[in-house]
Length: 331
Image (cartoon, helix red, strand yellow):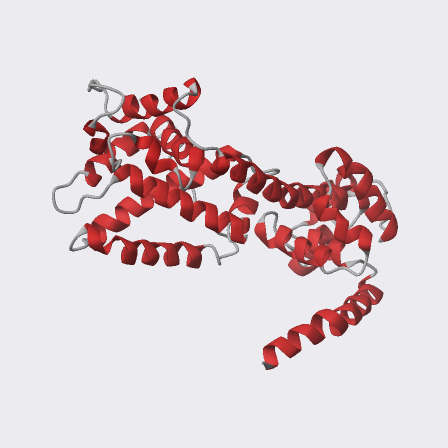
């Protein structure tokens, strides 16, 4: 109760006056201080996003919704409203001297000097633009993911059928399907004779993720499949993959993936970046499952939620980066 009251008081009254006071002391607006005082990635972009969304200025609040083609113009308006003067970036002048005298000046003075360089117009604009590209890119990524999720698997579409057969070929090289509808699909973790029924929840997003993992991390995908077919610790590979697609989707929708994408994508995150995250989830879940040694597949939901909680804890770290250690490769 007290926390809610304090939060309302801070955002509605205290924060505004605190920002005003600090600006009078430093001569710099909050966005300038954020762009200069925080590392690129989640530490800077999340602070900038919060500042913009909670600004009393309609122009600043609108910045998080501006598309890329209108970004430059909007940035100029923001700089004008915040009275950020565009002047020559002093880095080129200061850097030679700082190199010569770095060992003769106090470290704190050096830090303040280089921090202040970032407060000038040109560097500030570049840093804020990157933040806005990441913020708007995240929103656009969810729109693209939602469209793919809502696209149902259609056996009459050649592209859909080709992707499904490609998944089989990547995971089961040298093993020929007896027919399009067959019990063989169970060998890679589908429930029925026709996999199309398993894609209903996540649509083409589920199939696209499975194919991406198998195509870009073929060796790892086959290794995970072999674990999934273990006589005691096995699980339905494709079904679990679709389930982990839902996990990635829900994390994206809730905004929990913002720190990850802000740290790993310098600019607008694209669909391929979500596919990469899915690869990480599948690979790590398989290791988690094997290490936990569940009694049976009937305990899947329990261990799935435990894994989900572990991922959410990692995403609270401002430096989080859920990436595969190796570069994508295929056989």
